[in-house]
Image 1 (cartoon, rainbow, N blue to C red):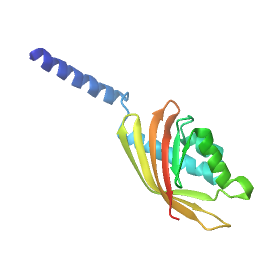
Image 2: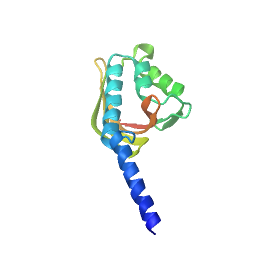
Image 3: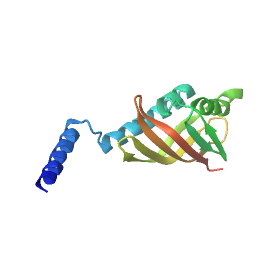
Image 4: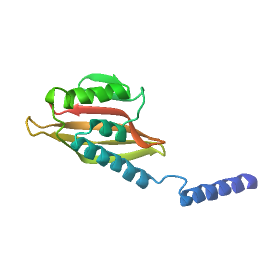
Length: 154
C-alpha cells in the first residue's frame, strides 16, 4: 500500500513538473493559438488569397472533411477547389470575411473545436453568412481544421 501511495505521489510531482516546465500545453495557450489561426485565415481571405486561407487553417490531408450545403466533401484539394469555384472563378469576389462570436474549447491536448458565425460582406452582391463548427487537431504545423461543418443562413 505504501509503495502504491509513493508511486501516486511521485507521478503527481512528475505531472506537476511537466506542466510547470511547459511540456504539457496549457488550454489557454491552445485557445489563443486557435484564435490566432482563425484571425490569420480571415486576413488571408480578405486579401483575396484563398490558397493561404486554406494553408493557414486546414489540414493538408485527403482525410480533411467539409460538410456544407447538403454535401460532404473529402480531401484538402477538393475543399480548396470548392472555395475557388465559389469565390474566385467566373469573376466571383471573395468579399470580406469575419468570424463572430467565436467559441473555442480544447477537448484534449491535441484536439479542440471552434464554433461561431461567419459573415462575408460583398461589394457587388448580397452578403452571406451562417454558422460553423470546426474540429481541430494539433499538427506539426500547428492547429489545423480536420473537419468543417458550415451552414448558411439561406
